[in-house]
Image (cartoon, rainbow, N blue to C red):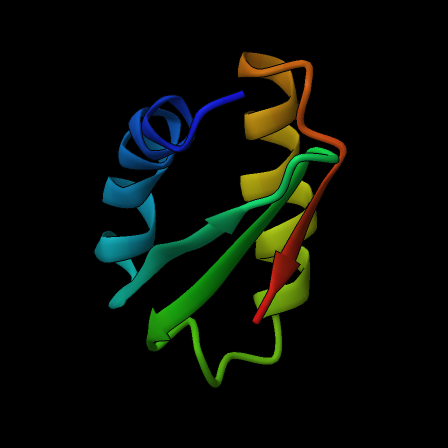
Length: 74
């Protein structure tokens, strides 16, 4: 799994986050399938950010890239 492929998938999710005043930045992709991201803008302080991260970003990444095991906020 390469970082460029993960970035492409995140770019598909980004417009919905930006519509709510937030954004996501890809920080790292580990060899064991963990994607590390940083939520930005309104997403950074939102009480729903973990739901967005797990039910939105992580679910979508896993559907598009089966090698993704987990998405972590850093």
